[in-house]
Image (cartoon, rainbow, N blue to C red; front, side, top):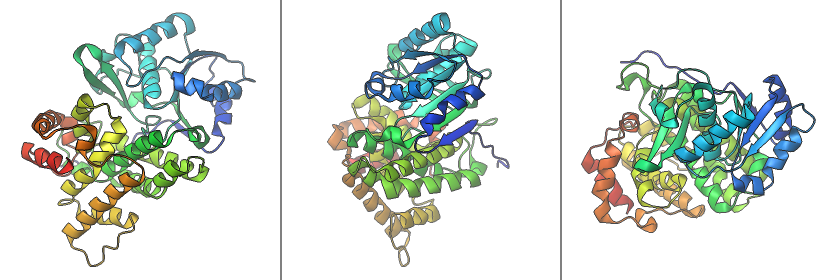
Length: 400
């Protein structure tokens, strides 16, 4: 049994409406002169990069823009950006602006600038040898939590695999979160990113207690502990209360702000605890469908929560209360069913699919999906209830 837990975070967090205006002072504190801004064409077209450049106008900084990030960046695109940065920019600081893909690209480029090689050289957990180039992460969605996490995901096109690089050295030096940057997000993107944040929070909260995680050494993802529980539960509360408003009323700045805060708290929690079987199942599903990652984890979440309810009775009750369910006279099974139905209703309210058949999955694919998910041990070991092949098959059939 483990007797200690660790908590890691981004070095500094700046949060609030209009906080993009503080970017110049943030960079001054880092004593940077050459800055590389990494983002994607959509963010640039939306005019958000202009807000960044405007915030830096009166500071003695040479700013270079790289706006070619694509979703789940392939290794060759990362190497292209790295070579550009190393030969032409030589940045003191990198800014990752956008969704998870832009921030992940920035993390990996910052890693390569410090240590060289290829992204695949650092795949897995705890493979980064030391600090990376200082990185400022500025999210434009409320979902991934990448601005505070220790993970970057890249695509190995040659082997058709998503590859994770996980190390606490990857955490940005500064996370700057301005909810006003999310005002222009379409409802569907808001829903997918928001439900992804909720899946992070729920899986962090319901993950196995750190004392019982079975892993050698000091695992990067260590299961739930007192501080992570506080962060995750507050994240669940914020997201449940605000996600429908943020989707239905895109200009509601209070809802947007609460969603960004919920996503941040979820990131601070799950980047220490780890995520579990909703994410394990989402990986093989992602290879079979064109659905965004958040849509998949959100779809799976009600079914996973129901599966885990047999061993996390009290935590299910606490989540039920946040869903405005009166559990006073309910037994364990009734609480689990009520939460299950409320979560499906939430997906309905924000316009996301509730069944795997809606995204094209057939019953004959169930066993293959279940087998692939069971191989992702780093996620399986975090789950409070250890699944067998038939458990995954039953869960997936229920979700059809």
